[in-house]
Amino acid sequence: MGLMPMHNPILSVHLDRSDSRRGMAKLADGRSFACALGKGGARADKREGDGATPLGRFGLRGLFYRPDREPAPQTGLSRRALAPEDGWCDDPGAAEYNRMVRLPCPHRHERLWREDHVYDLIVVVGYNDAPVTAGRGSAIFLHLAREDYAPTEGCIAFSREDLLEILTALGPESMVVIEA
Image 1 (cartoon, rainbow, N blue to C red):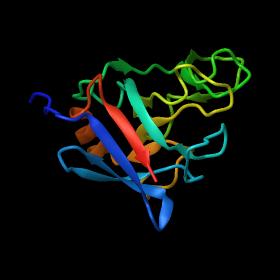
Image 2: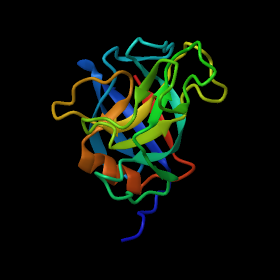
Image 3: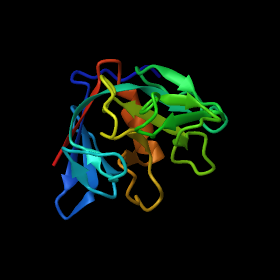
Image 4: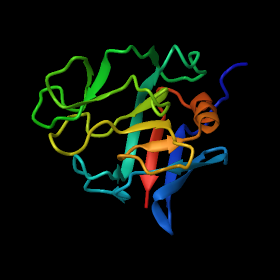
């Protein structure tokens, strides 16, 4: 099965009016998907550690996947298999801030190879990366939701089935637009 063509490679995310930690994402063709957002809601002035999902329009930089749990998904995004020593620096004082790092790492970081399944699929959102500004927030991803769609630390999380479907519509020019 080939990739599904996408005329407008935009994934629009709208906050739930009754709970800003949940949302609905929609592709240009009308398909929509429930998602979990940051425990701090969504903010235009995101800061490191606030638990908020950043509002705005961002490119999608590529997909990481756990090769021991997932075959390489169908997508037009660049794909890379994760390894146990992969991490993401979330230390605003480090030169590697908001970048992938190899573990062990002397700076504060997140481990991408996790025991749970939330990072089995990770799409890197191009937030605070061109250029990186210390303290504006890091490690903003599209990833897998917990069963109860519990809020994230600032990412956008989907069911496995929904994220796999979304991936088929994404390519190198795709964007995510997060709106209140």
